[in-house]
Image 1: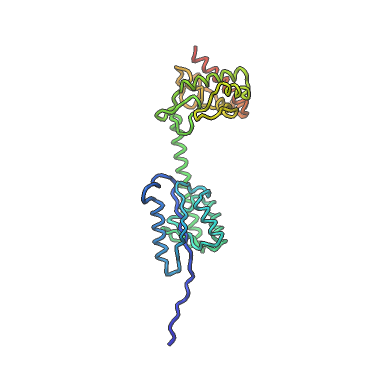
Image 2: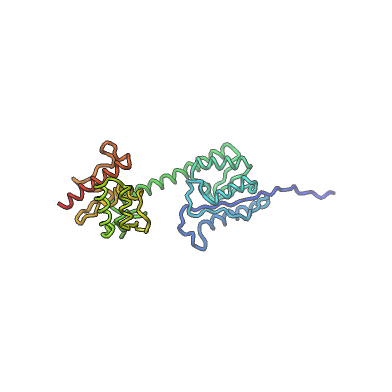
Length: 296
């Protein structure tokens, strides 16, 4: 009696992709990326009888949003897929791969073109059937909705904080420093700002003004040269130089004044704010009016 031969099982090379949106906790000995990889590797091991084998390369993206495809780990994974080095992509959840329905459609197109299977460890579905694709699209729609709601909530919080005069990060305008999340006037730099605004009103040229600033040896807070572009930004910045440069003027960030001294939106006077030069002149003139009022 002939011995029964076992059917040959084709080896499927499995690549694990992990992602975490924030950098918080990535320096820990065991973080979210490790937990995702451990779960995916355990799932691959359970499918060993089906020919699944784990590839050695690791495709990890820590501190990267799922709303973009510009991710180093994902780019390496897609390059290896195009080179025919991967047969199965394994993730912990669908939203680890992408939170954008449009982006995921692009990824699936690459998977289909290279005969690559996509597997989510915690969500069971088959993308080869129409019902499986429908389920996938529904899950992705909710993932995208969650991302957009979170982004809206963050934008609302930042806007509310700004209305209360809180500084929400970034390089403070020239003439200010940040203390306890508030913009505080730097008196030394404030004198330079007052001179720059007053001088611009006299000559009306940022090119000439930039040369005079260079001659005076003025530098930015980071020690860089103050050029014409920097002056344009300074002179047209609503938050900068005007709000509280004078002792006794306490204007709520980010407007120039309050009450009767509240400034109109930039460009309200005949659309001048749409042109850089017009906006600079408009802001400089408005600054002069506010300062004159503060001195009276």
